[in-house]
Image 1 (cartoon, rainbow, N blue to C red):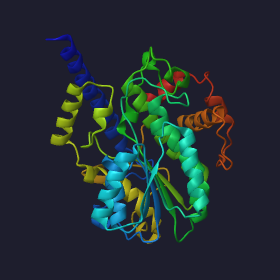
Image 2: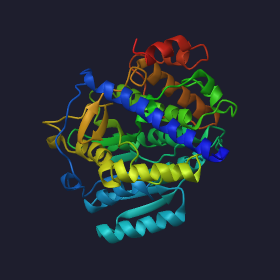
Image 3: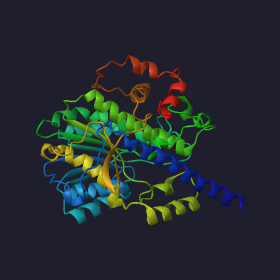
Length: 392
């Protein structure tokens, strides 16, 4: 067997093994009732409420889950602002959405998540318009890319999947809070993955050892992907904690489904052979894009209508998946730990500050940030991380 083919085969086996481990951790987490875990009623795109007068921002809107989310929001009369990296693809997506939805309140904004200045410029432009904001869907993402750093100096997957969304959310939070009332709540939704529940070997960077992220000698594409997705879960839970139980801003996160029929594998650091294998598997066994987008659509629209939340409330900071039926699940002991969520928050703030990107209104922690500062240091012990991973 040629060496390249042997390498490709190992890649496929590694992905399958990682997926199996992640699924086991993910499914094992469903047995707990810590967060009131339970099943929710069947949900389809027909159940999306009328969104006339609502304004949404969706990142990664030109393809996959982002495109489907924009399309369904548009079909239900929402004013949607689509953030894309590639203007040409964005314009084509915009044309299709307008044609299929017959909704002309669909806008396109070009802002690369790998450029924090571009995110800042977009947010400032939006705030200056004086529009309300009811839905912020942080959907964009990349997976298993080759080692690369953004112009801001951060590992590409970390910034694209987590840090840029963290920054965008905090920049737009004042608008969301101004829009939110008891009668008209608003929603922030982060699209994560069960990749967050994968193992993090020390020789591949460990867990949230940020200095190691930019070390190509120990960089591993899937571990880096998992870290960025772990950060999204931790950020969701910490933001909900800081906003408090009386907030009219609902913050949620989801795993949309395993190997959904998107093109995300083709952009990974794996070969064409590998990408075709993943594509074949997903098209044979994975959920459709339409089904995959249902979870984020549910969590981004239902919280806006208190009357819909009476029978099946959505807890702030909760995580959902859609495997046959919409379910709330408890993140594993690592993703759900107070230490990790505070560590992610503090690291993210410090990274933004290191680039001179200051945020005026950062929500304060009700229990103080002293612990977060300690956890952000290199002295945070790996033994504690390991015990969290093992459920201690």
